[in-house]
Image 1 (cartoon, one colour):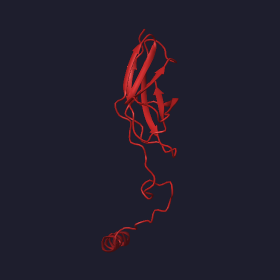
Image 2 (cartoon, one colour):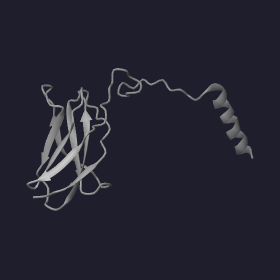
Image 3 (tube, one colour):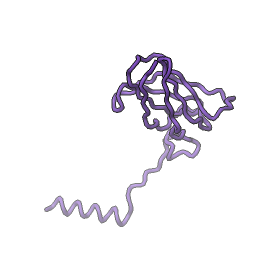
Image 4 (cartoon, helix red, strand yellow):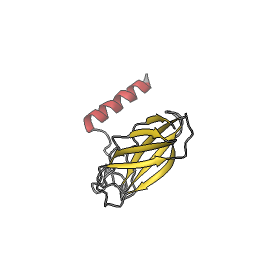
Length: 135
């Protein structure tokens, strides 16, 4: 009974005075520093396979320094970083392309991509897409 009273007392205190609003001073915290922009999630991920390789493309984002390409052999398995694609800033295409030739025929592969900005912050990793490797 005593613990219930203490719990109710704490709820009343939080209600009356608000929660403990922390002053965010971490320079790497994107929510506490207006100068930090975390890249948006990569969209438009498309896969195709011909000739025993996987062709990968996605929509290019602004203010991105590089992209990280991840691969797994199951949708819920561990995704391994297989490529880092650097941007020069001189790209004119609206899409980024990559090729994965380290694959086996008649196997399914699952891919995800993330964007990394100049500050080195990696944005959220995209949803996965999968492809069957064909000749």
